Image (tube, rainbow, N blue to C red):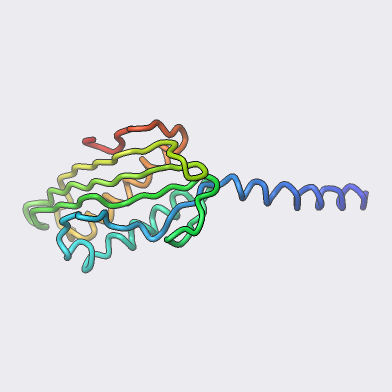
Length: 162
């Protein structure tokens, strides 16, 4: 009996590191794309990049491990996501109109494997702040990204309104 437990423990030690190496490396923090013209209130006051990073890391916890940018190497599968655009209008009384756009690239050993463009257009959120609604929209986008990773099709458009 003791030998079976010992053998099982040794087997687990050899299999677990291999399973961890199969996970996608998610580059964090999620940056705002170069040249993006996003209102500083969205990025600074609402903290959208930090909140999006937190929510995406949590959503992908079973399939990806976060790694700090910049990456020294590109071995294995690497997912880099960036915020392309975030626009809002309205207020708590007349409701919010918001559009967010993100893009992501999945590479394998430095070679392009697949990419996506994510778009979400929403209206609503009466009696709530614009920051809350914006962060909620980015949080919802994480579900679409996780779903895309199940079958990463190059050039896919994900999200609502995309």
